[in-house]
Image (cartoon, rainbow, N blue to C red):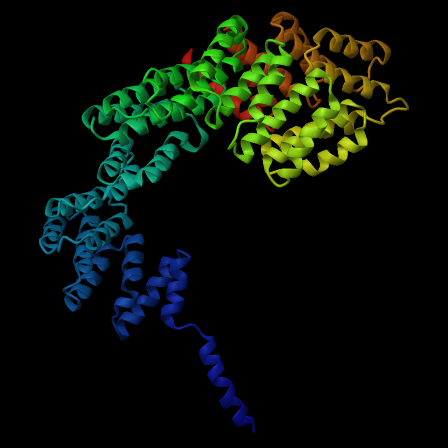
Length: 596
């Protein structure tokens, strides 16, 4: 019985033990090459196999046992003489020993036997690269390309140039890839972006390398639009928007296109709130005439950009009004121009205070046949906005509610729901407003979600913190007056809280509201004083970073004082790293620093 148990148990012990090759491989993978080699030597005495050869040879090289490595490679080549890798390894071992001439002769013998296939080139080059012989790996690719010019090893060669610390050649290889295969453009961009990012450390050298290479290729390969598109992307990445637009226009003129690239840039400028450059881009398209497929959209967006640029619009109200009227007369009132009518109504209401005219424009727009559901909803929201301006809260609620009901799971419906919540807030019904805002915090639209979060936080922080709800209700009512552009009345209400409830938690919010009003009224010095007050007296509160950003923006964009702007941007980057303004502040700081 005891013998039977022993017989049954012994096989389990045998199988539980690692085989010599497995044990050697374990040592190899843990970089314990000495122990691995000792086992491989014993294995070689019993049988030679290609199964363990590669690790065995590599370990010998790592241990600088080059002579032994050459012996092993010769033994392998004598047994498997058709495998060029073993002959290549002989040359590698010779090179490591300093036998330069012998190594070169060996390599020549290898290259005389190549078949010109891509897979073979990669195997041979990777073998060199494994031993940090990057120049030799490059030579492999060059030799194969001489044999078969159709082969393209751009990505492989670019990586080797990284290892050789030759970034200029790396960038050029990536650009060559696009020249041979435009479908690789996205990947090439990602690699160039990685090079420019430089692990988060700004590098003027890297920037200049890419710029020189792109300008060179655009000049040499003028028929290849992909290089020009890459240069446009490069300028946009570095916030050189004027250069990007100049290049896009040059490309469009060269190719005689419909200005699609220029239009895409104009849209991007709108998103970045660079309205003057957006207007310039749209104007280029408009000069192409009405037959251009982008003419209508460019007309709409150009006028919209003009109303968004505060400095421009305040000095050109009559001209913009005239342009809108001419555009509507020229393009008509139809489903294609619905956004033109909607924007014109907004301009009349919020810039010229012509509320009745704005209301009539939207009534007419709502009656246009064949509107998409989205366009109809946008008109209803704008109409409701104007009703709220007129003081007709119930009519506003009616139209907001229609949109909210029809688009429950859509951002436009969420926007309507947010506006309903704001009306509840204006009216002092904070509990109901809070309930709506809690739902909107999960909105798929980041903008709506953030707005809901901000209003919710305002209510949470300042309502029911004392026995009186008068300050909060007064503040909410002042906000409604502010929305209705009744600036003097809203300031009076805000100031009444400061007067009758000194030290209230709303104080910093009040100064922020007043600063924004004075900035809108172009009382820049007064606005700056109030932003500065928030920065200094509420440096640890929620509005401190915004106050800094507003000061930076004023010095940057209105007063043209880059040094002052940089000072405020730097404060945000250093002291408010989690701020929503941190990324833009960092970019503007770098841009201004490099520019000056």
